[in-house]
Length: 491
Image: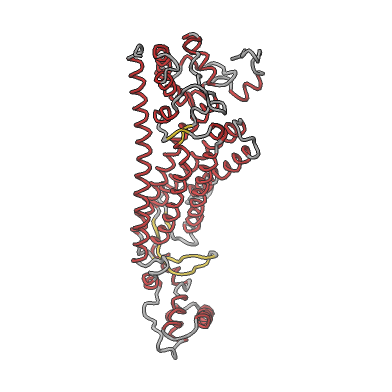
C-alpha cells in the first residue's frame, strides 16, 4: 500500500513516526488480536455466502491462525507506514499471493473494521469497571448492615445536623452507586450492535450476511445504517459520561472520609496498610490513598471533555478526529475509574468507625434539636416555626452557659411545657425513630438495603450474562473456523 495506484509514494517519515510509531509492536499488542478475530468471522461468512471459495478461505484462515498462535511474530519490529492493518494485510498477500491474501478486505473497509475492533476492545475494560463497581457495592452493603447502630451526625454545610448512623450513610452511597452502575450498563448498550458490513460509509453490493458476522463476534444485531455505523463513536462519550458520574460519587465519598479520618474528627480509623507516613514528620498517618481516589476519579471527566471536543462539529461520516483522536482518551480513563473504584473498596472495607467519637459529636452538636422542635409542635401544640425559634434560643443559651446537653437545657427551659416529653431525646433514640423519608430508623433502612441488594443482584446477573455471551461467541467462532478449515472443498 505504499503504491496504491493513485498514491505513488509512502507517508512522510516524520508524520509516519508521530502517527504510527517506529514499529508496529505497540499497536499489535493493543489491537491485532481483535482485528484478526474480526477477520476470522468475516472470512467464515464470505465463504458461507460463496463470495470467496472455501478453499481460498481455508488457506487464508490457516495463515491467520498461525499468526495468532505465534503472537504475530513475523510482524513485530516492522514499521507500519500506513497503519497496522495494512502491514498485516501486506504480509498475508506476500505469503499467500493476491488471489488469497488479497481477498481479506472484500466487502469491507478499514472504517467498519476499526469501529468493530473498538467495540470488541471495549469489552474487557467495560466488564472490569462493572465488576469493580459491583465489588464496591457489595462492601458498602455489608458494612452498612454491620454499622447500622453506630450513631453519628449527618452534616450540612460541614455542620452537625441530625443524628443518623454510619450504616445509614454507607447505604446512601450504595444507593447512589446503584444508579451509577445502571448508567454504566445503559452507556454500554451500544456494544450490542456490530458495525461490520457498513464498508467505507455506504455498505456494499456484495451479498454479505451481517447478522452472521455479528453473531459470530458476540453482538446481538448488525448496525442498521451504514453512515451511522462508521460515523458514530457516541459509545465513547456515553461510557466516559457514565464513568465520570461514578467518579463524582467516589470523589464525594473520599471527601467525607478525608475529613473524618483527621484527628479533629477522629470518626474513621484506617489500618497501617492503607495509610502512609511522612518523610520528615514521624507522627503522621496520612490517608493519601483517598487523594489518589479523588485524582483518578476525575480522569473520566477530563477525557469526556477532550473526546467531545475532538468530535464536535466534525462531518457525520468516518472521521479520524472522531474515530482515532476522540477514542484514544477512553482507555486511560476507564482504567483510572476502575482503579479508583478498587481503592475505594479497600478503604471502605477496612475503615472502622470510632463509635464514641461519632456519638459524642452527635450529642455536642445538638443534633436532636429538630426532634425537640417536632415534639413541641406535636405534643405541645406549638406552630413549628415558633418551636424552631424556641429550641434555637434554648441551644444558644446552653452554649453560652458552658454547653449543657440538650435534654438538660430543654428540661430547665421548658418546665412549664409539661406535655412535652424529654424521654428518648438522645441522638441514638432519635435516629431509631426516624423511620420516614428514608431516615436511619431500622424499618426504613432495611427497606432501602433490600431494594439496593435486589438491584445489585440483578446487575451482577446482567454482567455475568454479558461475559458468558461474549465467551460463547468466541467458542462458536472457533468452531466455525474449525469446520471451514477441516472441509475446505465442501461446496
